[in-house]
Image 1: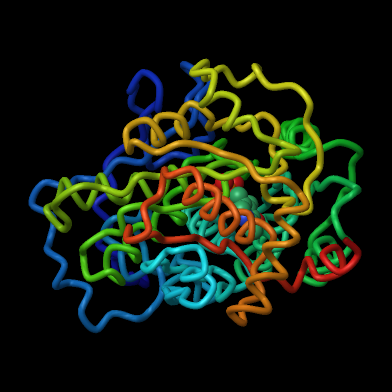
Image 2 (image 1 turned 180 degrees about the vertical axis):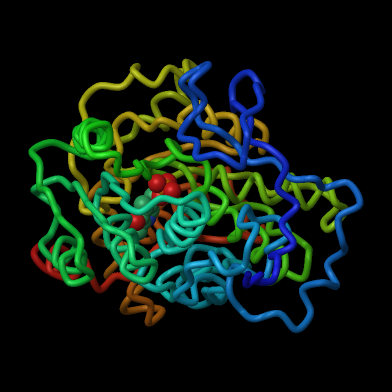
Length: 395
Ligand SMILES: *Cc1c(COP(=O)(O)O)cnc(C)c1O
Protein backbone atom coordinates (compact mmCIF):
# COMPACT_ATOMS: atom_id res chain seq x y z
CA UNK A 1 0.00 0.00 0.00
CA UNK A 2 1.17 3.51 -0.77
CA UNK A 3 1.87 5.63 2.28
CA UNK A 4 2.27 9.35 1.69
CA UNK A 5 4.21 11.51 4.10
CA UNK A 6 2.52 12.71 7.24
CA UNK A 7 1.97 16.45 7.49
CA UNK A 8 3.14 16.45 11.14
CA UNK A 9 -0.15 17.93 12.36
CA UNK A 10 -0.45 18.23 16.14
CA UNK A 11 -4.26 18.05 15.90
CA UNK A 12 -5.92 16.65 19.03
CA UNK A 13 -9.67 17.23 19.25
CA UNK A 14 -12.49 19.67 18.50
CA UNK A 15 -14.32 21.55 21.24
CA UNK A 16 -17.54 23.48 21.60
CA UNK A 17 -16.73 27.19 21.62
CA UNK A 18 -19.35 27.77 24.34
CA UNK A 19 -19.05 24.89 26.85
CA UNK A 20 -15.78 23.19 25.87
CA UNK A 21 -17.34 19.76 25.25
CA UNK A 22 -14.95 17.65 23.19
CA UNK A 23 -15.68 16.24 19.74
CA UNK A 24 -13.68 13.69 17.76
CA UNK A 25 -11.46 15.37 15.17
CA UNK A 26 -11.18 12.19 13.13
CA UNK A 27 -14.84 12.19 12.18
CA UNK A 28 -16.74 14.58 9.97
CA UNK A 29 -18.21 17.29 12.20
CA UNK A 30 -20.27 20.38 11.54
CA UNK A 31 -20.92 22.60 14.59
CA UNK A 32 -21.23 21.86 18.31
CA UNK A 33 -24.65 20.26 18.59
CA UNK A 34 -24.58 20.60 22.41
CA UNK A 35 -24.86 24.42 22.35
CA UNK A 36 -25.52 25.09 18.62
CA UNK A 37 -22.25 27.05 18.47
CA UNK A 38 -19.11 26.82 16.33
CA UNK A 39 -16.53 24.11 16.99
CA UNK A 40 -12.90 25.07 17.54
CA UNK A 41 -9.86 22.96 16.60
CA UNK A 42 -7.32 22.08 19.31
CA UNK A 43 -3.66 21.09 18.98
CA UNK A 44 -1.03 19.70 21.29
CA UNK A 45 1.07 22.82 21.75
CA UNK A 46 3.14 21.57 24.69
CA UNK A 47 6.62 20.83 23.47
CA UNK A 48 5.77 22.18 20.02
CA UNK A 49 8.80 22.95 17.83
CA UNK A 50 10.21 26.46 17.62
CA UNK A 51 9.97 29.02 14.82
CA UNK A 52 13.13 27.65 13.21
CA UNK A 53 11.02 24.92 11.53
CA UNK A 54 9.75 27.55 9.10
CA UNK A 55 13.13 28.20 7.51
CA UNK A 56 13.22 27.12 3.90
CA UNK A 57 9.57 26.13 3.69
CA UNK A 58 7.48 27.17 0.66
CA UNK A 59 5.79 30.57 0.77
CA UNK A 60 2.21 29.43 1.23
CA UNK A 61 -0.09 28.85 4.20
CA UNK A 62 0.89 25.19 4.53
CA UNK A 63 4.25 26.22 5.98
CA UNK A 64 2.45 26.14 9.37
CA UNK A 65 1.32 22.54 8.86
CA UNK A 66 2.02 21.37 12.44
CA UNK A 67 -0.74 23.73 13.58
CA UNK A 68 -3.15 22.87 10.80
CA UNK A 69 -5.61 19.97 10.84
CA UNK A 70 -4.64 17.91 7.76
CA UNK A 71 -2.98 14.64 8.83
CA UNK A 72 -1.90 13.23 5.49
CA UNK A 73 -0.11 15.57 3.10
CA UNK A 74 -1.66 13.78 0.13
CA UNK A 75 -5.02 15.30 1.09
CA UNK A 76 -3.87 18.91 0.79
CA UNK A 77 -5.81 20.69 -1.96
CA UNK A 78 -3.72 23.75 -2.74
CA UNK A 79 -3.70 26.43 -5.41
CA UNK A 80 -0.83 28.34 -3.76
CA UNK A 81 -2.85 30.28 -1.15
CA UNK A 82 -1.33 32.41 1.56
CA UNK A 83 1.89 34.25 2.35
CA UNK A 84 0.48 37.41 0.84
CA UNK A 85 2.59 40.56 0.93
CA UNK A 86 2.57 43.23 3.62
CA UNK A 87 3.36 46.71 2.34
CA UNK A 88 3.56 50.12 3.91
CA UNK A 89 0.95 52.74 3.07
CA UNK A 90 2.90 55.97 2.96
CA UNK A 91 1.54 59.06 1.18
CA UNK A 92 -2.14 58.61 1.93
CA UNK A 93 -1.50 57.67 5.59
CA UNK A 94 0.82 60.63 6.17
CA UNK A 95 -1.96 62.92 5.06
CA UNK A 96 -3.96 61.82 8.10
CA UNK A 97 -0.99 62.06 10.46
CA UNK A 98 -0.29 58.32 10.58
CA UNK A 99 3.31 57.19 10.17
CA UNK A 100 3.21 53.40 10.53
CA UNK A 101 0.36 52.06 8.46
CA UNK A 102 0.76 48.67 6.79
CA UNK A 103 -1.56 46.71 4.54
CA UNK A 104 -1.67 42.95 4.11
CA UNK A 105 -2.94 42.36 0.61
CA UNK A 106 -5.09 39.25 0.37
CA UNK A 107 -5.87 40.07 -3.26
CA UNK A 108 -2.82 37.95 -4.08
CA UNK A 109 -4.65 34.75 -3.15
CA UNK A 110 -6.05 32.29 -5.71
CA UNK A 111 -9.66 33.21 -6.62
CA UNK A 112 -8.89 36.83 -5.69
CA UNK A 113 -9.73 36.81 -1.99
CA UNK A 114 -8.73 35.42 1.39
CA UNK A 115 -11.65 33.00 1.12
CA UNK A 116 -9.09 30.80 -0.66
CA UNK A 117 -7.39 30.14 2.68
CA UNK A 118 -10.53 28.92 4.39
CA UNK A 119 -11.78 26.88 1.48
CA UNK A 120 -8.41 25.28 0.75
CA UNK A 121 -8.36 24.10 4.37
CA UNK A 122 -12.02 23.03 4.53
CA UNK A 123 -11.87 21.13 1.23
CA UNK A 124 -8.57 19.46 2.15
CA UNK A 125 -9.96 18.27 5.46
CA UNK A 126 -13.27 17.25 3.86
CA UNK A 127 -11.30 15.17 1.36
CA UNK A 128 -9.37 13.57 4.21
CA UNK A 129 -12.67 12.64 5.86
CA UNK A 130 -14.18 11.14 2.68
CA UNK A 131 -16.49 13.93 1.46
CA UNK A 132 -17.35 13.90 -2.27
CA UNK A 133 -19.81 16.83 -2.59
CA UNK A 134 -19.92 20.25 -0.89
CA UNK A 135 -22.35 23.12 -0.68
CA UNK A 136 -21.85 26.70 0.48
CA UNK A 137 -23.98 29.81 0.92
CA UNK A 138 -22.02 32.88 -0.12
CA UNK A 139 -22.12 36.63 -0.57
CA UNK A 140 -19.74 36.08 -3.50
CA UNK A 141 -16.11 35.21 -2.82
CA UNK A 142 -16.63 32.02 -0.80
CA UNK A 143 -18.55 30.57 -3.75
CA UNK A 144 -15.72 31.18 -6.20
CA UNK A 145 -13.20 29.71 -3.78
CA UNK A 146 -15.32 26.63 -3.02
CA UNK A 147 -15.83 26.05 -6.74
CA UNK A 148 -12.12 26.28 -7.56
CA UNK A 149 -10.97 24.00 -4.73
CA UNK A 150 -13.72 21.46 -5.46
CA UNK A 151 -12.64 21.46 -9.11
CA UNK A 152 -9.07 20.76 -8.02
CA UNK A 153 -10.20 18.07 -5.56
CA UNK A 154 -12.60 16.40 -8.02
CA UNK A 155 -15.61 17.10 -5.81
CA UNK A 156 -19.06 18.31 -6.76
CA UNK A 157 -19.74 21.92 -5.71
CA UNK A 158 -23.05 23.70 -5.16
CA UNK A 159 -23.13 27.44 -4.47
CA UNK A 160 -26.09 29.46 -3.24
CA UNK A 161 -25.85 33.24 -3.50
CA UNK A 162 -28.15 36.26 -3.31
CA UNK A 163 -29.64 37.08 -6.73
CA UNK A 164 -28.41 40.67 -6.30
CA UNK A 165 -24.75 39.54 -6.28
CA UNK A 166 -22.84 40.93 -9.29
CA UNK A 167 -22.82 38.45 -12.18
CA UNK A 168 -19.05 37.96 -12.12
CA UNK A 169 -19.26 36.09 -8.80
CA UNK A 170 -21.67 33.52 -10.27
CA UNK A 171 -19.73 33.29 -13.55
CA UNK A 172 -16.51 32.21 -11.88
CA UNK A 173 -18.38 29.41 -10.04
CA UNK A 174 -19.97 28.20 -13.28
CA UNK A 175 -16.59 28.20 -15.04
CA UNK A 176 -15.22 25.94 -12.29
CA UNK A 177 -18.12 23.54 -12.88
CA UNK A 178 -20.28 24.35 -9.85
CA UNK A 179 -24.07 24.35 -9.73
CA UNK A 180 -25.19 27.87 -8.84
CA UNK A 181 -28.52 28.70 -7.24
CA UNK A 182 -29.62 32.36 -6.95
CA UNK A 183 -32.03 33.33 -4.17
CA UNK A 184 -33.92 36.41 -3.06
CA UNK A 185 -32.55 37.61 0.26
CA UNK A 186 -29.08 37.84 1.79
CA UNK A 187 -26.60 35.17 2.87
CA UNK A 188 -28.71 34.12 5.87
CA UNK A 189 -31.50 32.99 3.49
CA UNK A 190 -28.92 31.23 1.33
CA UNK A 191 -27.62 29.53 4.48
CA UNK A 192 -31.06 28.13 5.30
CA UNK A 193 -31.41 26.77 1.78
CA UNK A 194 -27.91 25.26 1.92
CA UNK A 195 -28.88 23.45 5.13
CA UNK A 196 -32.00 22.02 3.44
CA UNK A 197 -30.13 20.86 0.35
CA UNK A 198 -27.38 19.40 2.50
CA UNK A 199 -29.93 17.34 4.44
CA UNK A 200 -31.62 16.18 1.22
CA UNK A 201 -28.53 15.32 -0.85
CA UNK A 202 -25.81 14.62 1.71
CA UNK A 203 -23.60 17.38 0.29
CA UNK A 204 -21.34 18.63 3.08
CA UNK A 205 -22.31 22.13 4.27
CA UNK A 206 -19.28 24.45 4.39
CA UNK A 207 -21.18 27.48 5.77
CA UNK A 208 -19.01 29.89 7.78
CA UNK A 209 -18.27 28.39 11.23
CA UNK A 210 -20.78 25.58 10.68
CA UNK A 211 -17.80 23.38 9.93
CA UNK A 212 -14.60 23.62 11.99
CA UNK A 213 -11.84 24.10 9.43
CA UNK A 214 -12.35 27.29 7.39
CA UNK A 215 -11.22 29.23 10.44
CA UNK A 216 -8.00 27.16 10.55
CA UNK A 217 -7.21 28.36 7.02
CA UNK A 218 -7.93 31.99 7.93
CA UNK A 219 -5.81 31.51 11.05
CA UNK A 220 -2.70 31.30 8.89
CA UNK A 221 -3.00 35.08 8.38
CA UNK A 222 -2.13 35.47 12.07
CA UNK A 223 0.96 33.26 11.77
CA UNK A 224 2.04 35.18 8.68
CA UNK A 225 1.52 38.56 10.31
CA UNK A 226 3.80 37.53 13.18
CA UNK A 227 6.43 36.15 10.83
CA UNK A 228 6.26 39.11 8.45
CA UNK A 229 6.56 41.62 11.31
CA UNK A 230 9.57 39.68 12.59
CA UNK A 231 7.59 38.35 15.59
CA UNK A 232 6.71 41.83 16.90
CA UNK A 233 3.03 42.31 16.28
CA UNK A 234 1.45 45.60 15.20
CA UNK A 235 -0.43 47.53 17.87
CA UNK A 236 -3.73 47.60 16.01
CA UNK A 237 -5.25 45.32 13.35
CA UNK A 238 -8.29 46.56 11.43
CA UNK A 239 -10.41 43.89 9.75
CA UNK A 240 -13.63 43.95 7.68
CA UNK A 241 -15.96 41.56 9.49
CA UNK A 242 -18.71 39.56 7.82
CA UNK A 243 -19.01 36.05 9.23
CA UNK A 244 -15.90 36.77 11.27
CA UNK A 245 -13.66 33.79 10.48
CA UNK A 246 -10.68 36.04 9.76
CA UNK A 247 -11.02 38.01 12.98
CA UNK A 248 -11.48 34.89 15.08
CA UNK A 249 -8.78 33.00 13.18
CA UNK A 250 -6.09 35.69 13.43
CA UNK A 251 -6.69 35.97 17.18
CA UNK A 252 -6.60 32.16 17.57
CA UNK A 253 -3.19 32.15 15.88
CA UNK A 254 -1.88 34.78 18.29
CA UNK A 255 -3.07 32.80 21.31
CA UNK A 256 -1.49 29.59 19.96
CA UNK A 257 1.82 31.32 19.22
CA UNK A 258 1.82 32.93 22.66
CA UNK A 259 1.29 29.54 24.27
CA UNK A 260 4.21 28.11 22.30
CA UNK A 261 6.46 31.06 23.11
CA UNK A 262 6.71 32.07 19.43
CA UNK A 263 5.60 35.58 20.39
CA UNK A 264 5.76 37.53 23.65
CA UNK A 265 4.47 40.91 24.75
CA UNK A 266 1.13 42.59 24.21
CA UNK A 267 -1.22 41.46 21.45
CA UNK A 268 -2.82 43.92 19.00
CA UNK A 269 -6.17 45.60 19.56
CA UNK A 270 -8.50 43.93 17.07
CA UNK A 271 -10.96 46.25 15.35
CA UNK A 272 -13.92 45.02 13.31
CA UNK A 273 -15.33 47.20 10.51
CA UNK A 274 -18.77 46.85 8.97
CA UNK A 275 -20.99 48.74 6.53
CA UNK A 276 -23.63 51.11 7.89
CA UNK A 277 -26.07 49.04 5.81
CA UNK A 278 -25.43 45.85 7.77
CA UNK A 279 -23.72 46.14 11.16
CA UNK A 280 -24.80 43.42 13.58
CA UNK A 281 -21.34 43.21 15.17
CA UNK A 282 -21.21 46.97 15.80
CA UNK A 283 -24.71 46.89 17.29
CA UNK A 284 -23.98 43.90 19.50
CA UNK A 285 -20.64 45.35 20.62
CA UNK A 286 -22.22 48.70 21.47
CA UNK A 287 -25.17 47.03 23.25
CA UNK A 288 -22.93 44.47 24.96
CA UNK A 289 -25.81 42.13 24.33
CA UNK A 290 -24.13 39.59 22.15
CA UNK A 291 -27.37 37.94 21.14
CA UNK A 292 -27.27 36.96 17.50
CA UNK A 293 -30.93 37.83 16.91
CA UNK A 294 -30.73 41.34 18.38
CA UNK A 295 -30.21 42.85 14.98
CA UNK A 296 -32.85 44.00 12.55
CA UNK A 297 -32.63 45.83 9.27
CA UNK A 298 -30.34 43.75 7.06
CA UNK A 299 -29.42 45.36 3.77
CA UNK A 300 -27.05 44.68 0.94
CA UNK A 301 -23.69 46.43 0.65
CA UNK A 302 -21.30 47.17 -2.19
CA UNK A 303 -18.91 45.38 0.19
CA UNK A 304 -20.89 42.18 -0.21
CA UNK A 305 -18.56 40.22 2.08
CA UNK A 306 -19.87 42.38 4.93
CA UNK A 307 -23.57 41.78 4.21
CA UNK A 308 -23.99 39.07 6.87
CA UNK A 309 -26.98 40.06 9.02
CA UNK A 310 -26.93 37.15 11.52
CA UNK A 311 -23.38 35.84 11.87
CA UNK A 312 -23.23 32.39 13.50
CA UNK A 313 -19.91 33.32 15.15
CA UNK A 314 -21.07 36.61 16.70
CA UNK A 315 -20.20 35.55 20.27
CA UNK A 316 -16.69 34.59 19.21
CA UNK A 317 -16.19 37.90 17.41
CA UNK A 318 -17.31 39.87 20.46
CA UNK A 319 -14.95 37.83 22.63
CA UNK A 320 -11.99 38.73 20.40
CA UNK A 321 -12.92 42.43 20.45
CA UNK A 322 -13.22 42.40 24.23
CA UNK A 323 -10.14 40.29 25.02
CA UNK A 324 -7.98 42.39 22.73
CA UNK A 325 -9.27 45.75 23.93
CA UNK A 326 -10.59 46.48 20.47
CA UNK A 327 -13.94 47.65 19.18
CA UNK A 328 -16.33 47.63 16.22
CA UNK A 329 -17.37 50.52 14.00
CA UNK A 330 -19.10 51.09 10.69
CA UNK A 331 -18.58 53.28 7.65
CA UNK A 332 -21.16 54.33 5.08
CA UNK A 333 -21.57 52.96 1.57
CA UNK A 334 -20.46 56.34 0.19
CA UNK A 335 -17.31 56.25 2.31
CA UNK A 336 -16.53 52.74 1.07
CA UNK A 337 -16.68 53.76 -2.60
CA UNK A 338 -14.72 56.95 -1.88
CA UNK A 339 -12.13 54.78 -0.11
CA UNK A 340 -11.68 52.55 -3.16
CA UNK A 341 -11.11 55.62 -5.32
CA UNK A 342 -8.78 57.31 -2.83
CA UNK A 343 -6.46 54.32 -2.44
CA UNK A 344 -6.46 53.65 -6.18
CA UNK A 345 -5.38 57.17 -7.04
CA UNK A 346 -3.07 57.86 -4.08
CA UNK A 347 -1.40 54.50 -3.45
CA UNK A 348 -1.84 52.50 -6.66
CA UNK A 349 -3.86 49.91 -4.78
CA UNK A 350 -7.16 48.62 -6.16
CA UNK A 351 -8.75 47.52 -2.88
CA UNK A 352 -11.94 45.53 -2.63
CA UNK A 353 -14.75 47.57 -1.03
CA UNK A 354 -14.28 45.59 2.20
CA UNK A 355 -10.63 46.70 2.30
CA UNK A 356 -11.62 50.26 1.50
CA UNK A 357 -14.03 50.16 4.47
CA UNK A 358 -11.06 49.33 6.69
CA UNK A 359 -9.07 52.24 5.27
CA UNK A 360 -11.92 54.68 5.94
CA UNK A 361 -12.47 53.25 9.42
CA UNK A 362 -8.81 53.87 10.24
CA UNK A 363 -9.20 57.54 9.32
CA UNK A 364 -12.26 57.80 11.59
CA UNK A 365 -10.41 56.17 14.47
CA UNK A 366 -7.55 58.63 14.06
CA UNK A 367 -10.02 61.52 13.96
CA UNK A 368 -11.68 60.43 17.20
CA UNK A 369 -8.37 59.91 19.01
CA UNK A 370 -8.79 56.14 19.39
CA UNK A 371 -5.79 55.67 17.14
CA UNK A 372 -2.54 57.58 17.75
CA UNK A 373 -0.40 58.87 14.88
CA UNK A 374 2.66 56.78 15.72
CA UNK A 375 0.88 53.49 16.37
CA UNK A 376 1.75 50.57 14.18
CA UNK A 377 -1.46 49.72 12.34
CA UNK A 378 -2.16 46.80 10.03
CA UNK A 379 -5.07 46.96 7.60
CA UNK A 380 -6.37 43.76 6.03
CA UNK A 381 -7.40 44.12 2.40
CA UNK A 382 -9.37 40.90 2.08
CA UNK A 383 -9.65 40.65 -1.69
CA UNK A 384 -9.09 42.00 -5.15
CA UNK A 385 -10.97 45.06 -6.34
CA UNK A 386 -11.42 43.68 -9.84
CA UNK A 387 -14.61 41.70 -9.23
CA UNK A 388 -16.29 44.89 -7.96
CA UNK A 389 -15.24 47.39 -10.62
CA UNK A 390 -18.63 47.54 -12.35
CA UNK A 391 -20.34 48.37 -9.09
CA UNK A 392 -17.78 50.93 -8.01
CA UNK A 393 -17.86 52.70 -11.37
CA UNK A 394 -21.67 52.96 -11.27
CA UNK A 395 -21.64 54.88 -7.96
C1 LIG B 1 -16.01 37.10 3.09
C2 LIG B 1 -15.32 38.37 2.96
C3 LIG B 1 -15.14 39.22 4.06
C4 LIG B 1 -15.64 38.86 5.44
O1 LIG B 1 -14.91 37.76 5.94
P1 LIG B 1 -15.40 36.95 7.19
O2 LIG B 1 -14.34 35.97 7.44
O3 LIG B 1 -16.70 36.32 6.81
O4 LIG B 1 -15.55 37.92 8.30
C5 LIG B 1 -14.44 40.39 3.88
N1 LIG B 1 -13.96 40.74 2.68
C6 LIG B 1 -14.13 39.97 1.59
C7 LIG B 1 -13.57 40.42 0.28
C8 LIG B 1 -14.80 38.76 1.69
O5 LIG B 1 -14.95 37.98 0.61
